[in-house]
Length: 162
Image (cartoon, rainbow, N blue to C red; front, top):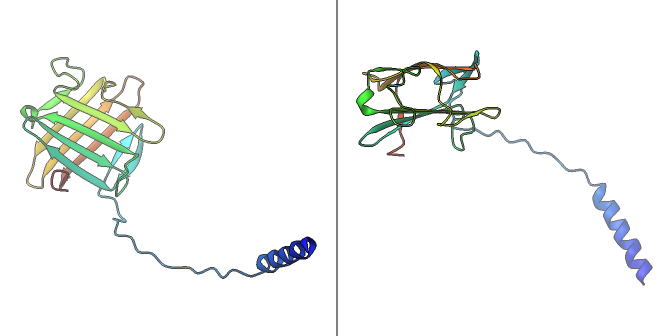
């Protein structure tokens, strides 16, 4: 009896294993922007940006510039500036401006991570209000020689109303 059940099981598995599976292809439409909103460059290479967000409180404006069109964001640039410095050019080599007090620059992608403690050593950073929304001009170089550049004047979606 045991041999009969074993042989039936083997025959059944062979029969199922020989059945041809029909692959069905379905077109999926995603509501994500195909063309980038803008670009930034890191270490001389240009990258597309598909998400632009901002948030504000009493003292600071914060910006999230991300390569991905939706969360989770793995490649992004996070900028923050004290509202007192809107329209002013912040020079990273000028020690009158303090990292994590007057400004904040964080960059991350799959190969690099520059936390807020690792501020750029040279370059400039300007945030201003414009008729389109906000204008940001970042041209900075880290101590390891890698540069990051971002220049955009336009609409940022509010994270506060998300």
